[in-house]
Each structure stands twice: as structure tokens, then as C-alpha cells.
Length: 260
Image (cartoon, rainbow, N blue to C red; front, side, top):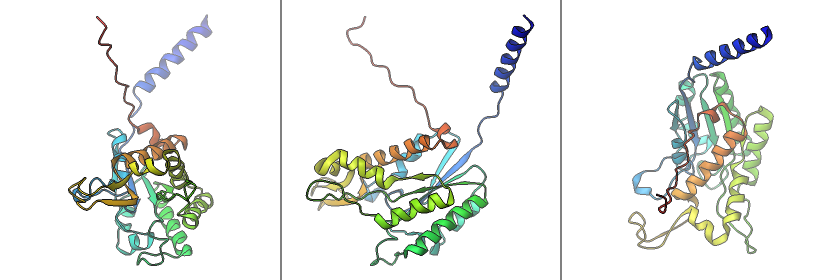
């Protein structure tokens, strides 16, 4: 009898303690990367970076600060002093989601970053994030829409995506392999239907692109949301503390019109 009373009292005490537990502190999730992630100007719509819908999935304790910029590589992001303000602003509990590669890997661009420098820049982002007791998350560059003659998705980031994976292993950083996972999604959609995810428009279809647009790199609203959902699923799978701050909305109830 005494044991039962003790167990009941202990359970009640735990319940009371949990009821008065402090609420999670406010944190900021910084996104650093390129145009596939960035916030778009109205004149670019319906082009949408996946960081835009990503920001809407969290509760009021999370601020998503999207610093990604069109055309940037790790080299130009640093050279233009875009990283340094983020590093100074970081506080314990914050996150930095790091997605580069699209512009680093193209030798004809000014933003080109040799492979060794690309890795060194990733390591710098990681070290300076951890120095502020914040958490880095590496993301491989999201896939471009490219299929071979047989309708199979082709790899377009082979070397630079692998550098991100290797750096994540070596530095023991959580990895979201958006390259491979987005390839899987594109394969599921297929050659024609995958166009529905990208900023592809016929002439006269949208006032921002009167002559039409055929873009196999940048997403429209649907494509950006699909990529954001992949990232969110990985946040949960990696068991990041951030996952507990994803908004849990109740499913809408359907009403039977025949019900009385």
C-alpha cells in the first residue's frame, strides 16, 4: 500500500514539474546558400526559393533568417561579407543551414570555387557556427532537372555534392542529402510532369515572363514547397531539437453534406 502511495505521489510530482517546465527559448535558423534557397523579389515570381515555404512550418519560437542570395558560391558569400554578420549574430541554440555548390562548381563563373577551397569554406562555416554554440547543418546542392534519353534523372552535382557529404562525415555534422532526395522526387514525377516543379512558363502565361521561361534549376511555388518538405522530413529524421518546433496543425474535419 505504501509503495502504491509513493508511486502515485512521484507520478503527480513529475506531472506538476512538467506543467511548469520552462518554454523552449527563441532561436534563429539562418539559411545561407544560393538562388535555389533564397527569397525572391516580386518581379521574379513565380520563381520561388525553397527557403520561403520552409520558414512557414515553425512555431513562434523560431525565426527563419534567409540570407541566401542568387548566384552566390561559398567564395563570393564570404568575399561580399555576407557570412560574417551571421557568425557575429549567432547565439547558443541557433542553427545554420548551409547549401552551396550550384555556383561553386561552374568554372566559367566568377563565383567558381576550386574543390579544395569549397571544402575549406564549408569547414569555416562549421567551425565559426560551433564557436557560438550554434548548430551547423550541411545540405547538398538541390538537383537540376536533367534526364537522359531513357528518362532517367542525371546527376549534375557529382563532385561538389560528394565534398559536402565527406565534410559532413569528417566534421560530424548533420547532413541533408537534398541532391539525392530531390533526384528521387524528380524521377517519381518523370520527364514531363517534373516541369510542374520548375519555373517553366509558356509565352504570355505570366506577366513577369511575357516571352515565356524554360528554367530547369529554379523552382515555382509547388517545387519549392516539395523541396522544403524534404528538408523538414530530414530535420525530423535527424532528430534535431528543431523538429520539436515544427507546427503541428490538426487535420481539417470534413463535413458530410448528407449528415443531419
